[in-house]
Image (spheres, rainbow, N blue to C red):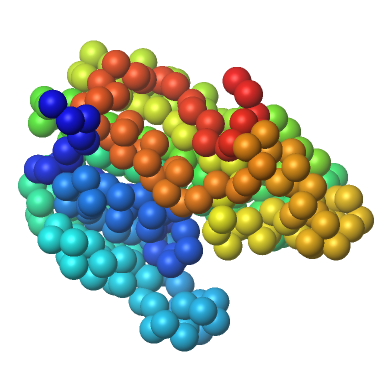
Length: 282
């Protein structure tokens, strides 16, 4: 029998999935390709704030991702959701159940925007610190808090995958808030995995490394400033730190998420798995 992953009949929620060149969109499309129906969510972005390439292609965030999924023959529900808002998370769960009747997979991918947090701890504004932790940690907590009981009531197990980062594997200068939130996310994953294991619900985390998304440019700019070199030189140095000598793709991350969301990963829980080309080993 050929090795396949079949998610037909499963319903997945993916947060932070509204950007064209983002990990969330890649995960949503990969889950749909494996047969799942997908609820695509993201925090609302005014169209005037979209990158030029998204504007040029007429991109409409989660609405566009949902159209792509429907074109694949799967059902999709696009929702604008701020995961830090309890009421919006509750409504997300209610809308999903009203539309599909169940929830089998939750992928917590929503992340705080980078920028003002990339300073030394002594210069980090408290409001920025709080916002990063609120999105990256509290947002994941709220989604799990209101989705997990649905999975328990269904009595058929479930899969929760939290998207962390290799920045949660080791600290880096000027990444105090971000690294702290990602370290915390891995601890939360372990706790939730133990709590939900009796119900057959698997909870795991994925740590992407340098992935070719908009955030890759942010990372390159951050390292260029740290090293005092050009952006091009910083990118070369970053790639030279990766044993496989290349950056990752959205598909590299999405492939692992699809596996963890499937029955093929039924004996894996409480784990944090790196997708980083060997840059971090643990």
